[in-house]
Image 1 (tube, rainbow, N blue to C red):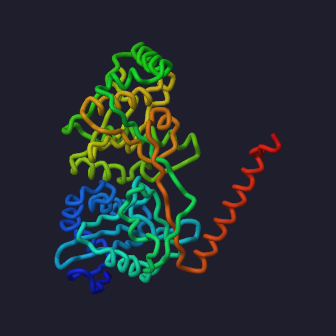
Image 2 (image 1 turned 135 degrees about the vertical axis):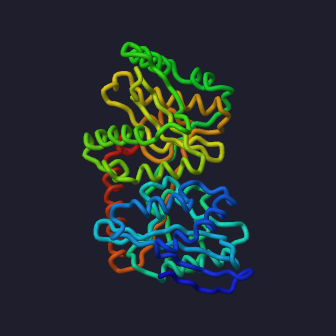
Amino acid sequence: MNTFVSIDAVGTERLEIIRSADRLAAVEAEWMHLWHRTDGLIFQSHAWVSAWWSTVADRDQRALRIGLVWNGDRLVAVVPLAIGKRKGLRFLEWAASSYTDYGDIVVAPECSLSALRDLWAQLCDAGGFDLAFLNRLLPDAAARKIFAPGASSGIRLRPNHREEVSYRVAGSWKSGAAWFEDQSKKTRQNYRRGIKTLEEAGEVKFRLLAPDEPLQPVLDRLSALKRGWLTERSRESQLFEEGTPVLAALVDVLARAGVLRIFVLECNGAMIAVSINFVQRQVMMAFVTTYDPDFSRASPGIILIMDYVQWSIDHGLSLVDFLCGGESFKNKFATQAVTLQSVLGTRTAQGTLASVADRIRQRIRHARQRKLVPSQDAA
């Protein structure tokens, strides 16, 4: 069942909330046209959201809540949300949130602010959730229009303490070699030492996968390496579970959009490191990177990263974005760090209690941290 609501706004604007897979499929052409017209990131594309929804393992525990604004027959805004369950609570969050590094809406310049805020109110009134939690917001995210100060429609969203950092490599290097020489002496030495160590086992080759190369063997290899890494750290991810179609579906979206770039490092013909990347807005974005731990002494993952950073600079890209995640290598190479913020709002008593409990935990944590840091008087 989908909901349509007419509103008075600039022109003739109409609101809709998508709840079914059939209706999601039906708006593909209009959504993709808007996405292309606004130069949206892949995470907000119809293809990305549909690939997630068609492959997510626990779909019976979720519900679509995708808000649309129509101006006549033209789609002018998409708010891609869904309801998921965690720890006994129902969250209204970004659709495909687990695989979306930058959460946002898609909105055309002619879409009125009143329509966006009325759509948010309709999404809130539709219910079915305890908490609204929108995370990984870039400083210039269009979604900030919905919860700007003074907005009165729908649940009030307030800044939340949960933040993440996106690390980037940006600079005015004339070539990849110039970037390499700009690294510390130790970093350069470690890179060369790693290459030499690998060469003792066979020929070492860095390359970009050709568009016509079969992807499944690469994805199988990457998933197996990732599963081993996750098991070692007592973690898990549906993205890499054996036999699940999620990763292949998302990579297919990147390939069909023409933005996919898969880099591999091979030793004696065997793949020892792989990075699934994509390019948008003249930016190289690193989606998934992993390496074979049997070659860890040579740090093949770091070698691969340094190679594709140089490749990106040599091919005229303005920036390398490591996306979300706190891996140490990102900070090692980064010249920029962008804080991604989150907002939270409550709809039910259960959600309010959970939010209050979370704030209390945060205060206790901060109080403990202050006690651990000696004051200037004590010093």
